[in-house]
Image (tube, rainbow, N blue to C red; front, side, top):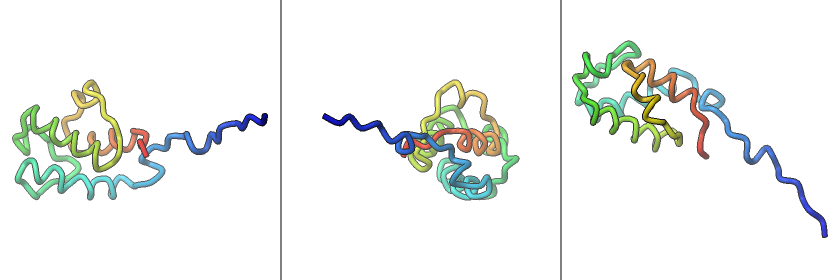
Length: 99
């Protein structure tokens, strides 16, 4: 009987940075934020709470959409630290892809 070793390349998790640039992530993220906030004028410096007047439920909705769009998992503790679009982009970039 021959036992094969697992192919470690198949189980390696890659971060989003290996696939996308910050600008690409931002461009994918803008419609998600716009759909929730109803505001189209969004920049990296945009504050999710003060500029877009989002509440914590809106933030959860955005995070859930990000998880689906980018195939990542984001923990509640990480979300609590995010206040700007730039911070959300950086968080997405730091996460390993689930696919």
